[in-house]
View 1 (cartoon, helix red, strand yellow):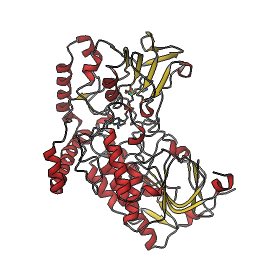
View 2 (cartoon, protein in one colour):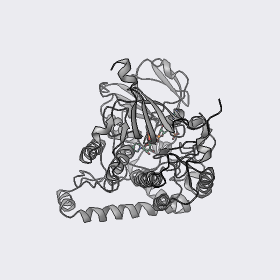
View 3 (cartoon, helix red, strand yellow):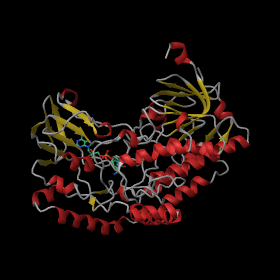
View 4 (cartoon, rainbow, N blue to C red):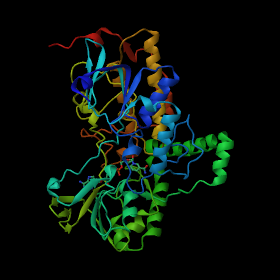
Length: 500
Ligand code: NAP
């Protein structure tokens, strides 16, 4: 692309950042409501978001397939009750095609800057494939998008092969290698059992043991699939059943953590059944209340840890050397490769650093270490900006797609309200945002996530700015109402020029 061509500004009414569940769902809703003037900016080579990028062996979703899908696009062909990554990716590609949004996606397009222009009342967006100007910016970047590497001395000096689980290097042959897998979170518990039979030696580096429950995943039978196809209502009922059962868990997570002791007992029994070595049993015993960190389902994790070629090291990693890593207890292990299952930049989300509001400050500067947004979506000082899956929308028990759909409906309603008022700008009132944050913080007090473990749900100020501390239907109910005074339209304040 030539210099002039690349500087040509694409002007659109709405720019959507990201083509995962959020971005695709938003685009489909816009089309349904007759809004054709939008573009999706996607850094990947195709649609799918997290399900495009995470291709590690064993990658799957731990929310049942019938719930982890769009309500408007049920899939009677799910092969398993808990889907694996290839089929979720295939589902999203199919949805993008079926609902006609694929040709709206500008792929291989990294957004590097998005600034609100007070004088023009538009978002100026810089991307790797040329600038875009939009009246409204909707981010669907996802909180689990940018891999995080451990902040450990010497990591850059390691000369062996290394990669993060979310950027799996399929060209690297792990067979016969000495490998360290760092982390024991949701990703690691899925890829470790898959690579264990291939590698010569596997060192699993644990910092905090997770609570593991038995997995109930199974293939969906031909009969079930035929039934879902002929009688879609059966699949809807099944979805409703799964939704309700999961929502009951929210009582334990958010209101009465003591109830989770029943679940904890199940996890203890799972450990006892699967581990015979008392030393290993001791190492994997968590010392915090179940649910405080994400509960993980697996029938393969403990057997993999017990395999002859696996050693579990507790205490994390202390240092990297060119050909080895040093664990927390000072043991030095020579390895050929390191696989990081060390999670994502959640509370310091990368979009925070390149989205600039009315006063020229970035979201990260505005948040000052603790992300806050009204219903996880709108931030005062940032007109015509909607975050999908922004702060305090995460869940420990149910489907993020449900949260996304709640937010999409609100964004669409807000855009319609703008049209009705012939308003050029919409911005959440600081008062509404403050009240929402206070209410979230208050509800957070009684949750299990506040029971004293360290987790990535907690930001650098000590606040849980990641999770939604209530039932998901409460979030949907609250999102469905736009109350008087919540938004300011074309207000004096939002039109104020930034002082030079
Ligand atoms: P994660 O849950 O953040 O786990 C990261 C792991 O790395 C933790 O065990 C963490 O230990 C460890 N770690 C981080 N820094 C370390 C260090 N310096 N030394 C040693 N260990 C270190 O990341 P994830 O496993 O990628 O999962 C992230 C989220 O993605 C999940 O919670 C879930 O929401 C989603 N996910 C879902 C699925 C699924 O549906 N099955 C699968 C994958 C991911 P600490 O616990 O001590 O911090």
